[in-house]
Amino acid sequence: MKIFETISLTTILQMLLAGVLIYLYLLLVTRLAGKRTFAKMTSLDFAITIAMGSILTDAVNKPESNFIPALVSVAILAILQLVFAKLLSSSKKVEKVVTNTPILLMDGARILEANMQKALVSKSDLMGKLREANVLNLKQVKAVVFETTGDISVLHTNENAPLDTIIMEGVQR
Image (cartoon, rainbow, N blue to C red; front, side, top):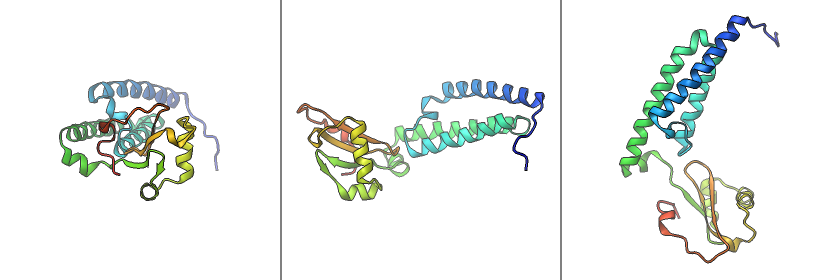
């Protein structure tokens, strides 16, 4: 088993050129298709970003066989991402079918155990997120939401400011 393979100078130069061209290509794709192409807005966005990264890594590592197919594959994924983004932003029905619903994990200081089980979030995960958000007392918490991306948002304050209802719009209670 070879641990280290020798790589020719030509191969290194091909990889270097492929890396530079793919970098420029990503700039172009991002400008044409928009920032959402590589954003983590939904779990689908995240999966597409990972897929694009994998495709482009292969193109840099094996430019002689994967460069053009990688560019085409990324263009297809970017176009599909753009089409889905347009559909999601223009149709509530499509949004409901394609995206997950955010889930309320805490309503004020009250931990919603059933929702935590539904979201597969442990109490220790929740407490970790509260610590990250610098929550010192559960009374500071207005709401904790398990977002469609898998992130946990902590809405808290030391003041008695009410939580605007629009912020919680679409969150499963």
